[in-house]
Amino acid sequence: MTSTLRFVSVTAALLGALTIAGCSSAPSADPAPTASETPSTPAPEVTATKAPAAESGNRASWAANPLDVGTLVGEGNEGSWQVQVFRVGNGTTTTDGIWALPESGDPVMPAGSTMTVYNVVVTNTGDTVQRLSGTEGIMIEHAGVEDYAAVLGSSEDALFTEQGLSRLAYDLDAIDTLPVYGEEKAYELAPGEAFGAAISTWADPGALKVSATLNVMDEQGKRLVDQAAIIDVAVTQE
Image 1 (cartoon, rainbow, N blue to C red):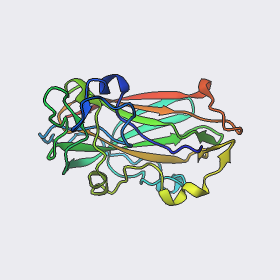
Image 2 (image 1 turned 180 degrees about the vertical axis):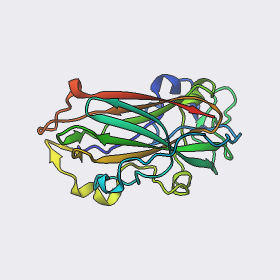
Image 3 (image 1 turned 90 degrees about the vertical axis):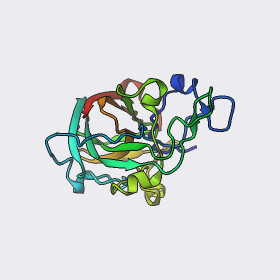
Image 4 (image 1 turned 120 degrees about the horizontal axis):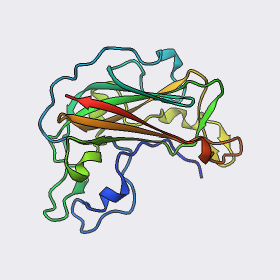
C-alpha cells in the first residue's frame, strides 16, 4: 500500500481529552491533514526580517506550495535538512472544527476563529537524493493557547488558498508520477530541492514550537529509522 505525504498537527495524548463534535468518545485516528488552530482574537503583525526561502526553481516537481511567500520568522538545521518557517498571514474559519470539549460539546475551534498561516519550507541541503517515506509530520505547539487547543489546527481549504497556499504539501496531479520503492511511493528531494507545508495556529500572541519530522527510505522502500530527523524551530508570534 502506498503512502501519502501528510502533515498532522495533533498528538494522540492530547486528543484523548477531546471528542468529535456530536460524539461521546475520542476518535482513534488522526484527523485529515491539518494545521493548528486559533481563538477569535487576531494577533498584531509579526515583526521579522523579510527573507526569501529557497528559490522557486528549486521546488520539487511534486510539491504544491510556493517557497517564496511570507516573512521568515525561524529556521533550524539538522544533518542534510534545513527547515524555514515563514509567516504568511491571518484568516478566519467559517465552520466549527471537528473537535469538541467532552463536558459541554462545544467546539474547541468555533467558526470565526482567527488563525495565522505559516509555510514551513523543508530543503535537502545534502549532496544526495533524499526519499521521504510519506509519513512526515509538521506540527505547531502554541504556548499562548491553553491545554489541548495548543496543538490543534484548521484544515479548511479556504484558509490556505486565500494566502496562495494549499493545505496539501503535494500536488495531487503529480502523485502517479512518483517513483515506487518496494511498495512505497517516495517523495524525492534532490540536493537543493525543497517543498512547503502550509499549517496554521491560533493568532494569539505567544511562543510557538514548529516541529518537522522527516523519515526517509532506502531503495527497497524500508524506512531508515536511524536517519530520521526531528527538527524543532522556535518562533515568537507577537
